[in-house]
Image 1 (cartoon, rainbow, N blue to C red):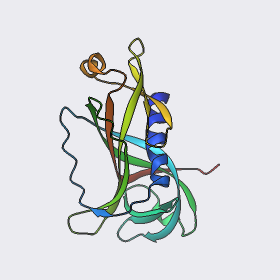
Image 2 (tube, one colour):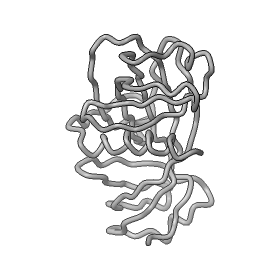
Image 3 (tube, helix red, strand yellow):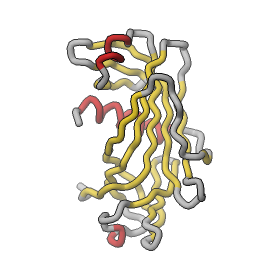
Length: 185
């Protein structure tokens, strides 16, 4: 994945730390007009609050936000201990949609749970303002509600042709499971 995409995802996850809301929600993917849906992996650091080896679940904390998440088979959950700081590779479903600017700023983070209530994850829903368009590189510069900026590579040529400064991008990330762990520095 290119560095611009990582920067945008890191920007969105960074907003989770600053988020004030922590409400339960069902994990149904948001329906966005003309949305681009993709799945990715991102690396982020968390504090481990609880380990349930039988259910293959971790309770993690980032900033003031805590959530439970499933750990994929093959990831050595038995080596993780309460109190550890871990670098976890998280599976993220992304939904991106272009909006013609209406001036709304939004930054919302919520904990999601499975329909049976057994598993939580994390959903990050942000609206970004398009502040620059680099058609030659196929990327746009975004600013969030906290005035942080990042470049985002646009994978769809049709969207790239349509996006203008002043438009907005709604990005919804749903963190669904831990796919791997990396050694701590």
